[in-house]
Length: 220
Image 1 (cartoon, one colour):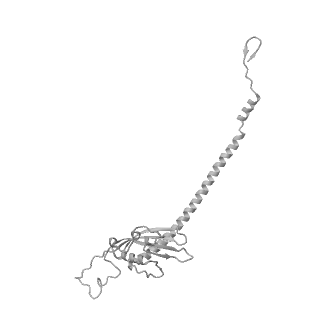
Image 2: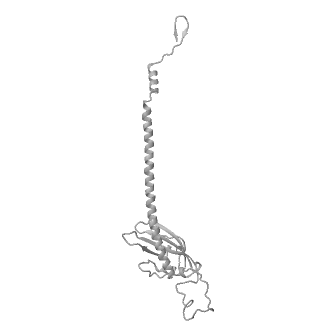
């Protein structure tokens, strides 16, 4: 408060030099360029990281799909071998195929091939389930390998999990041919095929992570 000698007081506001300097700093736009550069840098880095992640993910998925397709092809070949084995009622003498079977597996498979599921004998609980564990020989009926080095070699595990009896078979004997000639009085029974539900696991011998599973219904 400043008095002018006339008794009247007048109020004056004194603005310091520092105050005006503050206004000058606040009005300056020199720092905005740095802020914008930082923001754009963060956005660019995020965009590049996203591209790298997408590229890596697509590459991994493509490789996994390729390996899975190879495992599928190996499994299809294995299914064809299993089909041949079923058609000859378990005779493993298929050319160039080496079957690995224990005596217990062979006895169980023989029962599965010739009897309905309810009448299976010589089979453990693992042998009758739908699961195949490559570390447990009681969980599959047979195993063999498909392929030759240096190409990928796949190990095939297979098991029959259900059998529905029929009247067809590899050898029909005298039911259709033989010493009796066909004539109008001969009655041919309706052909009822066997139905086998088969589980197959195809696994890369060099990399067991590469695998494919199949559920097959085979009519014979």
